[in-house]
Image (cartoon, rainbow, N blue to C red):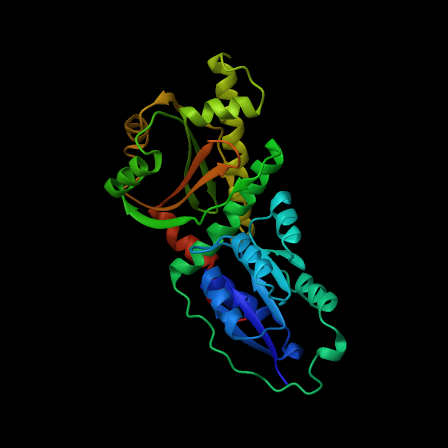
Length: 334
């Protein structure tokens, strides 16, 4: 007798890791969904004894999926598995009916403990008959998307804890750009508004690059209100706030990336690119640094404010083979 399980995650790597982490004794019969809408369609047609759900997904995210599961009266127990580890994110999913929360990358021992608490021993199969299922095929970009997803989750958590807010965590963008394409992406990122920008270099075991943190003028104003800094305060206080945000985001992202790649990254002190300047001025400041680059890009927003913070990591081309090598273990079966 098999144990039907639904795994919902937009990341092929995460779906594979989740499936591989389930103990053989569970005799899991696994069905995959790539986003919440697909999962809801499957739940209407099939019955499952357990569901594993990501939070950051296209079409319908994990929060919306939990709301729909609750409103439709679907009784399948849900375990959230996510890189969004903010305290307020955990509180929200538990309030929406999730039975447990496991952070990414998944810890097999934590998973076993969760299964032990959720599954009655009597419901486990007495005789294990292996159930075959097709694992997702992985591409290089799948690896980088999931690694970036975990790292931006660490950065969002650090920002949320520092300012005691809820940070909306979007899907990251991972691209390899020629320098002209990078400049176009920067213009799209800032939507051609006036921004304040900070740059920080980073390196570790031959892997190097630069991080850009961009805040629009309206975001800076709202951030000052959030921190109860007078609106008419001097530029120096505003600069300290920018540097603070940059150190939090860049440092925690690199820690998250380094933990997965087993690399200790070092970051330079933040350098101000300019305050209340055009995005073209930011581009001029970065011109000549790269000919080709891989980028991780994400735009954080803070709930109940108009604050949007754009974070862009640019890796020099020579770093990519080294980073590929460090993350090669994720392509392997385990």
